[in-house]
Image (tube, rainbow, N blue to C red; front, side, top):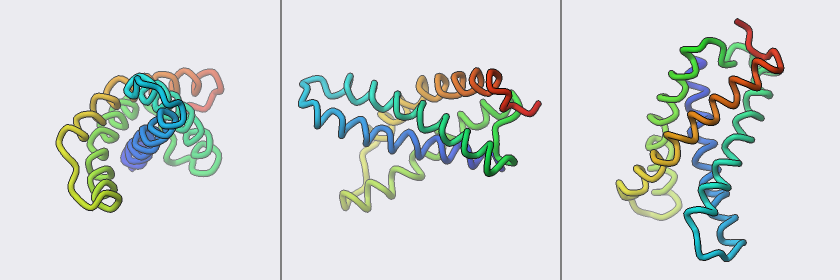
Length: 133
């Protein structure tokens, strides 16, 4: 159950971070949308997931990522939850179903970013002795 919750939250954080990255791009008025948006979204994803894990460690200890296998399960769950979150969100905000290109774009962001996020969290958890193994 903790894997599903963390995967869902990580996916939600990814989508929110992509939106925040788009806002940063809009504010910057840069010509290079993808680079500004991806770098910003990656930064926000890392920070927000670390914050989520810190909060869950303090308030919801049962859903903290503990075992090594939980990291991979969380990773795959986050990828599976993306379309489940994004398609209805896109439909509610835009009024039509999203294209497959948007879904694959999210996957292409998530695949390397979530590995990075979970590796950073694993290191932080060991340093801060958050891990309960």
